[in-house]
Length: 101
Image (cartoon, rainbow, N blue to C red):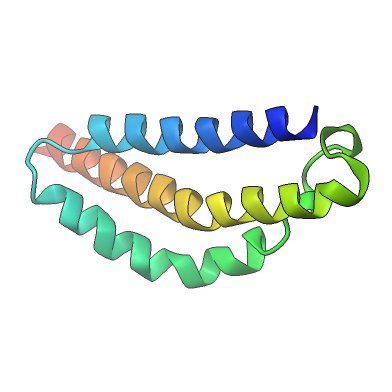
């Protein structure tokens, strides 16, 4: 059952990153801004996403096979969480500037 959770978590990370990025941008080149922001945020997020087993419940992985599952979810989190945060920050800045202007 652990691989089902892995697939669910990775799909959730990817879906959230796509949804938030699509909501945040209006033009194609704004994806490049989010990409640069993501590159800047990867390093700080490495300390948080190095091992996601600390934040996941015990039942989600399958014993010894759980090590591989943790690795895959950690890889997905390392790349998608900074992207999600960059898109959220971009969205927040755009919304704040729009409301003031």
